[in-house]
Length: 379
Length: 261
Image (cartoon, rainbow over all chains, first blue to last red; front, side):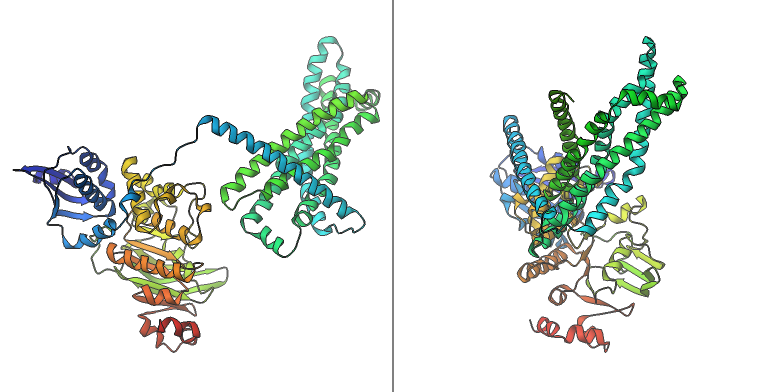
């Protein structure tokens, strides 16, 4: 061993050939923060079956990682047929080396399980999507059956929870729904006016607003906000209860989770979403009227007259009739995903995201379905 | 468990608490308590529910800020747990939380490797070997490495969390109710494991526990939190204390059974 080297490096290894015997001298601090270089050196030792001596006399500090390196080297050399002897290992390191040597040799050859091939994952994803759809359908049936029970002759709806949910999903959503409706009205009026002005048909901005907002955009925007706001909250609330085993506790007490958790939420949403949609419609009209006044100089009475001619009560009803359906889907998906949560923290986040994405997707798909239906019915 | 003392002297206490006061709102939990933990000993902390056992542990590791008093670990004043100045100190201790606190989005192997990745420069090959070694050390089968915490039983989670706490070879180990929620066989195996590791690695252990069997099986001294104060001594010394809570604790049916075993 060279003293120079010992001063430069806090942990070192020297190899020396004495006749037949290869002498490995370890010294310094063999602790985890200094081992990356030694690990490479030890791995690159040439294979041979000559006798080996491992000298630990110059070791100052040794931790379990360092002891493991010594042990690994020893086992590796023994596997190659060399006779290995450890000499001059300080007494104080022996218990540590022993406890590490006690480990099962096989356990150190830790094999990572094979990653699944691409096709396997595609197939599994498809089957999971099918299963998810199947389960959701089953769940839809269950909730529908329970709903008829609750609003049927027995009338056992949980009113306190229901009222609480109305407050949370409806009243507390008023500011954000109103603000976004108002802004959408402004944006639509501004862009519409800009385009229609080229034909000298600015006045039809009001028709665009009336039909666009009342029939489609009002209810869509409201549904998307509610999916992001309340649908995600349903999943997170119920999911957290699942993690805490509260759902299991309810079931063991004979409480029906659909009754207690799902119906108050879904029904509250079915009631509140049409009202929120109406509110968003009104706010969007106010925003549009303001923009028409500022940008096009159309007075409020003129705006009202034009609006009256542009839309019928049917336009308004067509928009509003979709709201309870969307609400039912949002509530259903939110609760369904919440009940699917597994008992780990990551699951709540993952399923909350999935719940929002699924409900927004379903809302838009249903909206397209409604459009086709209304056009066939000629409304 | 690095087998050599650091800069501080061999006989200095590993943890030195002086005049510690903690509390919530108007309620005082610890009223000017002093506590020394000696190098290489297993100290058990006992006390009734709400006596502040876990709070004391959390104050020492910096998760709770004391209202008054000083806490020194390895001779250094401790600060808030998130403070970067605490890193050097944090590398020298490991904490086993009551419910394991394994990161649920990571496999057991990744959990054990978190401190290794953060604080060392070792390559992936050696890192895998060290992970396997730690798993073997706490008595878990090698295939546990690829499982997620949600797939393990309570006892296995405790062992995996212990492996993570030991991954940087700390000199000081904090255990918060290590045997709570384990069946008696697993609990007694865990006691043996802790004692075993403590002796071969030269650890100092600070252990909060309710478990009388654990106290008898593993600790060198115990500290009892009663009436906002602390009493420290060997089990025999403490058992002679006339305090009614202590008498009931050790003299009750469970206390006598643990003593007899």
